[in-house]
Amino acid sequence: KMASSMAIFRVGCIGISACMLGPCLHHVLDLPQLARRVADLGAPFSDAPMAWAAGVCISETLGTLLIIAGAANFRGPRLGAALLIPKMAVAVYGHAFVAGFDQKFAPAYEHAWTPNGFSYNWSVGSSWECGFWGAGWFLLAYVGILVLPSSSANTNNSTGKKAV
Image (cartoon, rainbow, N blue to C red; front, side, top):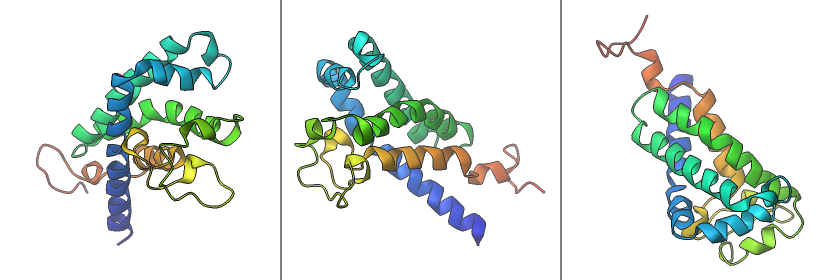
């Protein structure tokens, strides 16, 4: 039962991660806007915001695609999550600790539910540009994918039978 509960939780983490496709598309379509948000984080990001934004765009798109495309195997989602954790940790930091950072996202979170006293990190229901979930939820999902066993980790890939 514990293994099946963890497998269900891991599938949920992959589902949450799939919502990052919206921000990926948004960032590809409007890289200058992403560069402005990156610059808002201060040094070292403000020194070369377009370069950092391009790095974010590439890593989040590649990481998200690895999670989604590799959902049926062991390595793809974990590699994707590992690529995304640093980016999302910085986003969580920005929403939690950088003055005025949350306010710049107010239009995207206008109809979202945010717990009283919390940043947009813990919102649910943001617009597609922010992926429905707050950055904190994405970070938890990526950590979950990285640390939870996958169902394929318990099988022998050549036979498909459970490993002993």
